[in-house]
Amino acid sequence: MISDLRALPPGQVLEADVCIVGGGAAGISMAMQFHGTKTRVCLLEGGGEHMEAESQDLYLVDNDGQIPVLGMQSRLRMFGGTTNHWTGRCAPLDAADFTARHWVPHSGWPITRADLDPFYERAQRICDLGNYSYGEDVLEALGVPDMQLDRDKLAPQCWQISAPTRFAGKYGPVLRVVENIQVVLHATATNVELNPDGTQVDHIGLATPDGRRHRVKARYYVLAAGGIENPRLLLMSNDVQKAGVGNQRDLVGRFFMQHLRVDATLVMEGDPYRVSRMYARHDAAIGNYVVGARLSDRFQSASKVLNGSMITYREGGLDPDSGTSSLARLTDELRDGRWPKDAGREFFNVVADFSDVALNVRRRFLKPGAEPYSRALRQIMVEGEQAPNPSSRIRLSEATDALGMRRVVADWRLTDLDRHSTQQLVLTIATEMARLYKARMSVPFWLTDSQTDWSRHLRDVAHHMGTTRMADSENRGVVDADCRVFGVPNLFIAGSSVFPTGGQANPTLTIVALALRLADHLKSKLA
Image 1 (cartoon, helix red, strand yellow):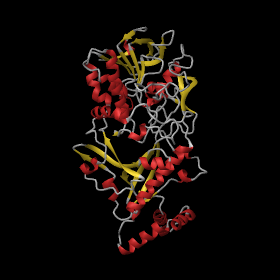
Image 2 (tube, helix red, strand yellow):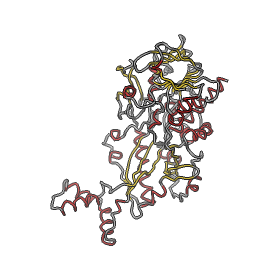
Image 3 (spheres, helix red, strand yellow):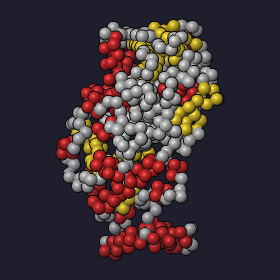
Image 4 (cartoon, one colour):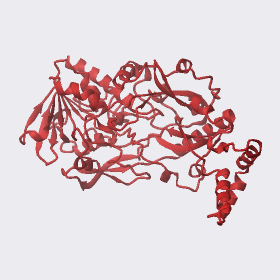
């Protein structure tokens, strides 16, 4: 059933076997695994069924790092969470992402890709995807020809595309009528209250938007509120453990990671669609795919870089930075009897990009009326992994929100390894595009100019990871391989905040797979 905490008189105590905080991909996926069982589940959502300004305001973030985290814009505080605006691109993490890489400090998961494979396969259905197939055998089924990549550098990479599925829209009707699962809207978790000796969660405090207080008591508790709100709730819960729940080693909120995105333009010579026929969306009976490329495991190890990948996503117009564009602007202005704006810069660009200009002038004489080849371009999105860095973190502000809860300070920081890896990723892709397709890829100046603060050109892509990381001991992380908080046997965490490393794949499929794995674990304990 779906209810609203605002409808209850103050001081109510909700009771369940499992309490899940957060109604997004992780929370809904977990709750649905108890559908039709005797387990009583209480799924708490801080927002309502639609976007509300006063609810979104509770996600406001103060920034104190190299790159601003948008907070309110990058997260949706409503039933379904950010699945209400995700793009649906899915892939599992690569097997090498789970390993300890000697050139990547703090890398390594306490589980392997093989441990997650059965749950990835189940997650496919949750996310409305096709077969659990992401290997190179998919390319033949999709009719993609040999990509002829230099396998010492790049390997083919496939993603599947969900509709994208809106979890509240798909699973809400079921949750509205099922008897053993209670979804409670407008129920903000305000603190995780431990018993006096700190060995168990006694209850979770709740508040409505107007400040009325309630609580929920359960046998097991799961925080599934995302990479920012999970650590926030743990840090705020300091009545018994003064540094916050699970924060005995000062690790809660640390290792905040995202994917590092660089957008570029690929200018083609000749047939403009050679790349798009290969690196494009392919819909087939086995699933809807996008094909791209990623750095090979061999290249990552040999070059000591992080993982990364690329896709092309649309054709564009005339490349505004090309010499041909400058020549076109100069010609148009002079033909109309006007002296060109920024004439010096435009003339310099024509000379600096003379190969582009000469080819198009030649095409103009040989094929009158032919479009300049600079119109034959594709947009490229390159996404790289960020290294786990303890100095990159989520912490609490002294300022409070409308419910009296301390706001979040996002201190997102990068390392030299991040910049080196991103440079190598972009340059490697540019070199391969030139070799295979005689294509010229625009590499942003800020990426290769050592005097430029490159972090100013990066942005929050809402892949918030790592702040309650999984590890084999409490000296290295916040939760164990079963996602249980060290030292608190009945408290678990779901979602991307448990990722020790982020890989190159979008996080949603892994979020759902881990949620299904945790649901099975709790079922075994409840049995």
